[in-house]
Image 1 (cartoon, rainbow, N blue to C red):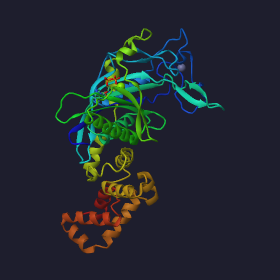
Image 2 (cartoon, rainbow, N blue to C red):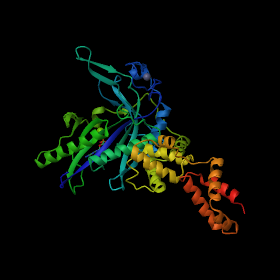
Image 3 (spheres, rainbow, N blue to C red):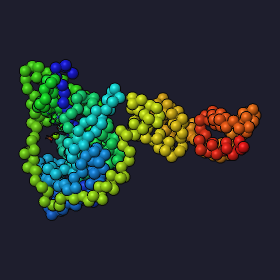
Image 4 (tube, helix red, strand yellow):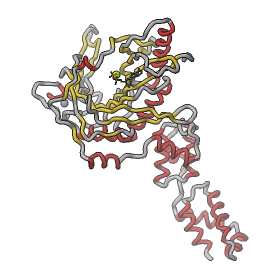
Length: 434
Ligand code: ADP
Ligand code: MG
Ligand code: ZN
């Protein structure tokens, strides 16, 4: 990045809500079924068919909004976004426009130096996915066909503020957002199947300038690596244009990884082009306080909070807590929480995870690394230590109670730190007597 220009990036993420059925009809959400087998009059847009809103999709959208610190609107509204495309049989997409489900939130994005930077979220709204056009099919490869299994699948569009400063920060924002969505159970995190995809808005401006430059929009990227490469390329392109005295055209582009460059698709459409109007077939969405409160109470600890816990309890640095995916660390902590591991053993398992890439459970199974709670085994280990320490035993019984620490330490050493501390205390006080 040249020193006299800075990049400004804002991301719009389309995240599929991980529901069993579609947003406005009872058709199943599944991928890989025969084309046009998961459809009904509503998602086909047949005349007279009416939408009815999926409660599960709303609940997931609310959970995401709460996890991102958004204000969840008690009353939101659906709108029709009108455009023509063969994968959109109704001729409009049901979306939310002026009264979105969630507004104003943030995401703390990890930085290379271990700190985090807070990026604003403008809004998050519910909408439906379109179908899929399949081009170049048939023997002649000249035919295009439409599969509408995906039409009507619920999406949450999460609109980030234009506050990201580099391609790598944008990629990190997406990783972090994906882990929040997965942590609240709203998204399966599968980028390849298109469950999580983004549009990247990119502009540049002279350093010190407060106003935003003209942006281009790169559509539908579904890989962290592609996002990073596309933004890097686009920033360089815009800086070169401005340097040459040209201007940046407000256009919509697509990233082509094979040629390693963006291609212009069309001029950027404005919201006037869509003739938004309130969806007459759906009433306003009104949420009760109890509904939102219940969802808020059921939120799990979120990735950033969990990461802080790893740092605290395993003595890791912020940097250490990021080699491993947050899901892998969460699995390790689940074993700490259910008593399978002690802190000492967890540190050992962690080191092996980093070294081998194996999961916590695989390592625990394969190496028998778990807390020993079995009373017989702990008794035996205590007896062995006591038998080998007649002098300490005599001193202890004569009143030198501080020697309890000595016995504990010896048993812990003998068991490789695996004795359950509470079971150990009980066994020692029973066997030492006095
Ligand atoms: P749309 O792209 O649908 O027209 P918006 O105007 O709301 O909608 O912009 C959407 C996204 O574009 C947001 O994520 C926002 O952060 C980003 N954005 C807006 N202006 C700029 C800019 N000048 N540079 C980079 N990103 C921008
Ligand atoms: Mg956009
Ligand atoms: Zn349907």
